[in-house]
Image 1 (tube, rainbow, N blue to C red):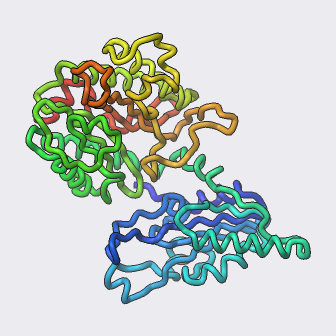
Image 2: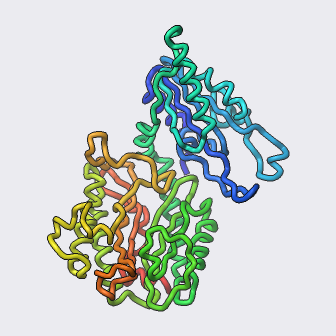
Image 3: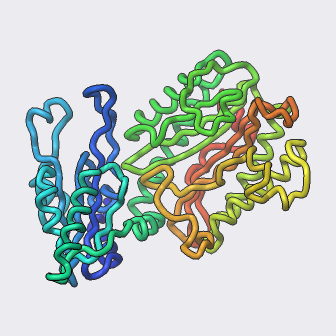
Length: 437
């Protein structure tokens, strides 16, 4: 697998931020349950994307003054007592030797050193309300100091800017190393879905399906699940983010499984909907075939120079036409396609999201003028139409109530079309049913 060129990414930041600017990004501390139980840690994506450093609390400073650019890290120092409990730390020295920082300091010195380091920058790029109030406090105090001294010195931070204005766009297009990692995450997820499908049966717990697929991730080299696994049977499949996974699967249920592996920091995201019987039939088959047709139409629309809105519109037209056929809605097709239409309650989410270091990855969906983002080679998005008829919807035909179907794949935009990274997992109704063995 190719190695990541973090220095090249930092050079792109220096080009983006201007001649008198600083970018400050911080990784969150560990999350704890109760008094002292630490949850498994995943570093903030922007920090890792620019530095490769994956430890809690890290703060990175990218500072530019004219043509002089510097990369400074504040990290946790070595601590033999804490390392006995939670594992080895890289320490301050490794921040220079291994991660290429020009300078490195203990995180405890942030409050003293950071204001001086950004004191002559005109613009400071920093995320607010990002889980690091200590970083925000240091930056805002530096701004206040500069406001008082600027009339005399002519120097000091003048503007706070959200780095998402360019970092999100950077992360939208994946480089070769990222594509390697994401293809591997997709492969692991496909293989784990294929294996775990055999656990779907009447009498099994949703939790058993969750356990089967997540153990498959780990046995194949993933660091774990990219997000909480959804194993939603029967009416639970109409709850978009059902993660309790606490129901016993009943005979005749459809079981919606939405899961993805995280491998080498990058995420996959797949959904398949399985029958508990030997095949789809009746209302379940009718809904499944509509969602599959929407899925295929959306994938066909995912191509260079098309837009992410085109992908959603292609899926929506098929879904709403199918709802008309099923008697879920009535009226004019074009009117029902409006975002304000009552039909939206049966497909309340968009068809796609960006995919990468985060499962809902960084990057805008519309440009500043409001126009949808144009798809370019190297972008990866999900295609995941769904149709959900909750049990309480009294206007729905009885046979459709409690049915939820979603089909999701991961799509890489290529210069000549697309690559479906998760194409190894079947989508045709008979093939999906056969996966259960």
